[in-house]
Image 1 (cartoon, rainbow, N blue to C red):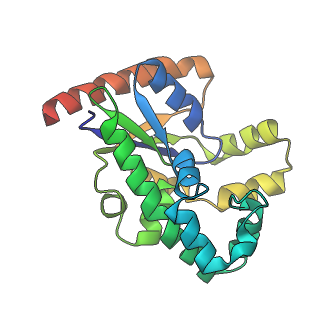
Image 2 (image 1 turned 180 degrees about the vertical axis):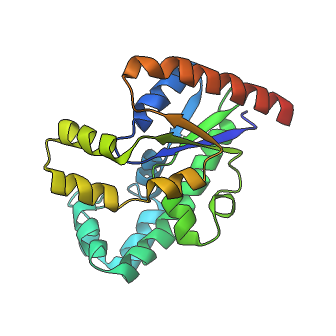
Length: 211
């Protein structure tokens, strides 16, 4: 049972997934918020039932699952609808993440939460209030120009769309403001493992000290 939990976050194209894979290679359980979000509204779940009650059966796909493109279109242009959806989904996601992390083997576990800074801003009370069970926050940091160049290469999009994707998230400064630890990932992938190994050693020592 992991008694120490680290939140992992970073902006789009910062390399969060690769960092997570490096931790997993060291035997660390990494629980993904996106997977928890899918589980929160899985077919037959209480969460999906609440979404249908709030938005109507038209948000369901023919197989009974949530029609995610339809739901995105519904909330994209309606702030009140987005807030209503988040009020249903986000508490369930946080509960699923916490349960999975606490049940993980090893001295510590990691919760990969791409929009951690955004959640803290939205709550108006910071990360420690939104996620009081996180003991540390690790931010994967890259300069905005590196994000842009990676998005252009990875997704084959134009610069205007890349800039909109970056602007839709928290700023680099907002992410760094919530960080206990920062991993600068502006170099080649082969530079990551030693940095991750050093952080892993730190987290194991902190977990041991925490009891």
